[in-house]
Image (cartoon, rainbow, N blue to C red; front, side, top):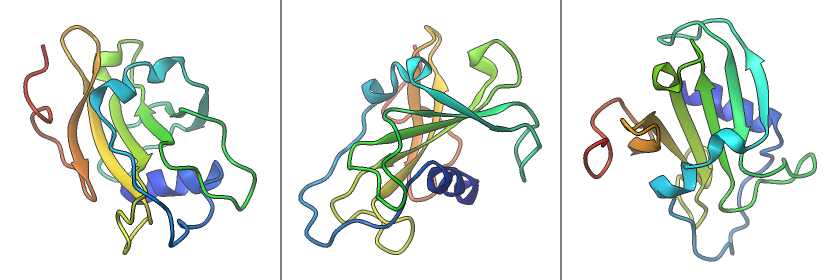
Length: 144
């Protein structure tokens, strides 16, 4: 799945890696995903991917893609959804955040990956994060 998300980011204009002198970094928190459904979205297909259900897939972007060949800036967020129904609670959600600061130097340079879900109040929450996030309990606590 991570390869599919990276491929989508590249298609949207992810571009090259970070500059070696890139300062600091960005740590995404649950609140950074709160309004993702209001961001522009792009349809990316409906075919089933390995180990994922069929359904319309979309990418929501926190900002417009940079010009072709330019990398996304630190702080950019892409949320990938598989929307099997009108009910967001049934959606499969994945995200990638341009963290920068030397993060993930051996993979998608500067990008951190996430699994997201919705709390019982319908608020997006981080379920797991890192280089290979997995399903599990919400990151940092309950889903209330």
